Structure formats: C-alpha cells, structure tokens
Image (cartoon, rainbow, N blue to C red):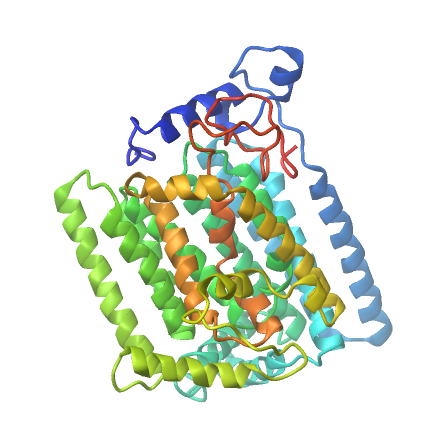
Length: 493
C-alpha cells in the first residue's frame, strides 16, 4: 500500500527508485559496493554510528554526577528523577524493537534508543540552564500548579483548579497528570516532557517514511535526533515539548491521509490536531493550511475516498477557525481582527534582552522569512546561547539555499508529492503568523515546532537534468536522480 500514491511516470520517482536500488535495500549506501566493487544492491552490515557511543557516554556521566549530587545534598527530588531515567529508556527500547520489527531492520534499535539518551541529556542541560541561570521562568508556574493537581488526583478525586483548559492551563493539567504517576519533581517532569517530544520527532520520521518511501529516511532520523535546537528547546516542562508530540502525531496522520490510509490517518491526526488547538490554536491553523492545500492539489486516485477526505478537511478547518477565534476572543474572524491580535502579541514579546524590532510579513516577506527561520545572525547574538543558535541557523540557511532547486522541483510536482506541499505551506504560514514576534529567544523556541518539516525539505532529491554534486547536502541519502552510487554525507557516513 505504501507508495502507491506516487506517479511512477514521474522522473523524480523513477530515477530515485533506481538510485535507491543501486545503494541497496532500505536506501542505505553500500560502502563495500562503492569501494570494493561488490554487486549493486547487495546487503551489507551497517556500522553503528559513532554518535550513539558519545550519547551514552554523556548520559552516564550526567547520571553519575546527578547521583553524587543527590547523595551529598540528600535531595530526594533528584533521586526520584533518576528512577525515571531507566523507565523512559525501557520504553524507548520497546518502541525501538516494535519499529525495527515493522521495518525488518534490527539496526534501528540502538539508533532509536541512542536518540532517546541524547534527548534526556539535552533535557538535563536545559534544566541546568533554565533553573541555574534563568531561575526556572515559566517552568516554576507549571510545577507548582501541577503539584496541587497531582495531590488531588492521587486521592482519586477530580481537580477543578486548572481554570479554562486551554493554553497554559492545559499544559499545567498535563503536567499534573505526569506528577500523578511520577515523583513530584521538576527534574522528573522535564525528563518526561522531553521524552514526549522525542516521541513526536519519531512520528515526524515515520510520516516522512510513509510520504517519501523512495528516499532513505535514516539520515532524516539522524538530523531529528541530533540537531542541537531540537535536543535543547523542547526538552522541559512547557508547551514546546507537548506541541512537538502533537504536531508530530498530526503530521503522521496527514501522511497517512494523503497516501491512502484514512483510518490510520484519522486516528493520529485528530488527537494530535486537538492537542495543538488546545494549546496554540494559531498553530492549528498553520497545520490545517498545509493539509488543506495538499489535499486540494493531490492527484486523486479514488473519487469516493477523495470526497471523504475533503469532508474531513473541511470539518477540521471549521473547528480550527472557531477554536482560534474563541481562544483570542475575536468576535469576527476577519483580517482586521487577526491583525489587531498579532500587533498585541508583538508588543508583549518586544521585552527583555533578546528583544528586537520584528519584520512584518506584509511589509517585507523575504526578510520576514529570514527573521523567523534563521535569526539571530551571529553579529546579533547577545549571549552564548544566542551565538550557538545563530551558528546552527546559519548552517540550516546554507542547507536550504543549496536545496533550492530540489524544493522548486517538488513545488512543480505538487500533485504527486502532497506531503511536501503540506510541509512547504505549513512553513509559509508559520512565517506569516510568527513574523510579529520581536524576541529572538521566543523565535528560537517556536521554530523548533516546524523544524522537522523544514528538515524534510532538505532530503528532497535532485531534479532530473540538474548538475551532479560530489556530496549530498544532508546525510547519507540517495538524492541524486542520476543514480550516482557511493555519495556520502555529513552525518550518515
């Protein structure tokens, strides 16, 4: 079933499949084939990536350090958090084995578990920075409210102190449920939320695997689990971690809906989309815009299924618009009312040491896109964290610039590549909505929610007839449509 949505007369599909066949089963490049002359397509053992050992080493060091600190300070909160770590890693191992069984690829197990270790290390770093440097900020409010709710839940009673269950209050309720089954510890809460975000990145990966079955998905997975901003920002108690899970689930549902599995798509799209709507309705509109246009442009293969899909999209859209209007207190959902709300948001974010004058999308679309996706620039960095963010953003900008031909080719083939349309349109409306933000720190956090979709565009194949490059722009991916074997990458090699 997977892949039948593709137009096999499309040169992009035909030549990419030939390139994948040259590189061997699963899309992985055969190193022995390119260097030692073995037969094309022969299965060769994959070496375990070196970063897995690095992640485990960092994890063990951090775990031992936390244990020693807990013993010397008799901090029971840290002891409780340390008990969570093996439980989360055991869950990661169970998920990894299930995925490896589905894909018939046991080498995925150490990669997925190693990615979970890296994510927990990122959560530890985020915790130390947030509470050691910035005194916890929003996480403190989540923590205190969640403890009150968890005490009531543990008595098997309902807690009505959350207020209106939307936005911040909804995330506090989620944290209260987490504290009900885990120690009431900020560190434990951060680890659990980081793990939820990690599950979201895995769902993004599975969505890509469904939508792009002719491409190697492994390099995409590597970027998802190793990109510093994805390791750091959505790794603590807060909205970003929960939204990463929800948008990942929604994207997995979108991939299934667009590619022929309506039931499976609905089962993940609906809860994921509902979670996004409850926390940030404007992000729900961003996702809906991508889904709506992808559905409109896709090449229909079964008219009845297309009508059902269109009905689902219309229903989702009506709910998203209604929920967004209610969330922002808009009496009418019009351009003027939306603009006024965005101006208010701008005034609230232009505060603190990371504040800057935002660039409205209506005033300068290209500069607004650069601002939302890539700033701060290295010369604008006012702290070490901003400098690291700017370096990563510069690398991502260069990758995006190098893939401009591939992205344009995908746009021209929109009818046969609807998930790419979903990604591009979602990123476009994300830029429109967040161009009013006047704070680099807020932008750095928010863009991680759309970054997995951005990275999926970096994996697109080279259009037919384009000049051959000696190295791919990202990962060990058979992106060349000229079926050039043995081309390595920065991460996958």
